[in-house]
Image 1 (cartoon, rainbow, N blue to C red):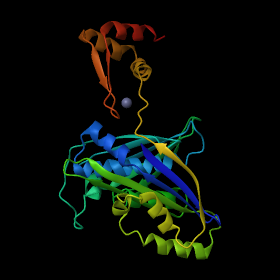
Image 2 (image 1 turned 90 degrees about the vertical axis):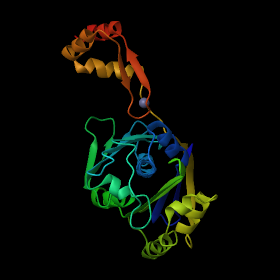
Image 3 (image 1 turned 90 degrees about the horizontal axis):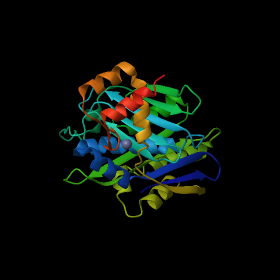
Image 4 (image 1 turned 60 degrees about the vertical axis):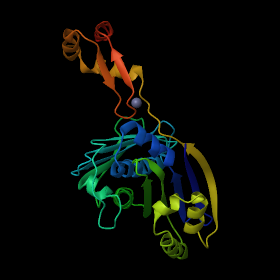
Length: 291
Ligand SMILES: [Zn+2]
């Protein structure tokens, strides 16, 4: 289980969403067999999407975060729900890069440059889509930029993932800190100072008392309230019915081509690697449902 904690300053100037997502990133690594660098890429993106998911307005809403950079990892796609449950996949999970100039996993190099978008599906037809240019591909800076340009909300996002030599995640997490309308100047200065007290988010989330440390450091000298905390997980929503609908939507001609092949087809979920097989008879039955 991952865990999200939400807190707000007593004067209503700023809110903080903090997540410890180690288990979520571990599961992503297990499903996709990610390299060290890609564990960091997908880990940061999953954490960001999860944190943004729980900013949605309604329990039926969902959020998609997709990076389309020109780096070797290809596209990075994450989908989250209102409770911060999240799933994700990347173009090439196995690509590995040398460490960057700072000796860190080269997330920015793996993602590359290009654009990314955030789509919020409110369940009312057309989703709300915010499109941005990738700033650095390091994910956190890009998310910060998204909030400033697309949502006009002064935001600081920090994300960190650590891996062992088997490329598995040993710790992951991050936070989104936002100013609320009418934020007090003295509180803003204090927050700016406090942010500098956590120079390494990867190190902070690896601490035993990570949540407590991060919240008390960011809100140092300020009165604040933790207004809720809840568990999150890597969760896929795929189902047999979903695949049936997808097959039906292909139309008669495509289904006929599959039926003519004369053998069962196997479909694999890109988020959870779950496999569904459809026999020729089952394909015939689906075809019969097309009016
Ligand atoms: Zn799935």
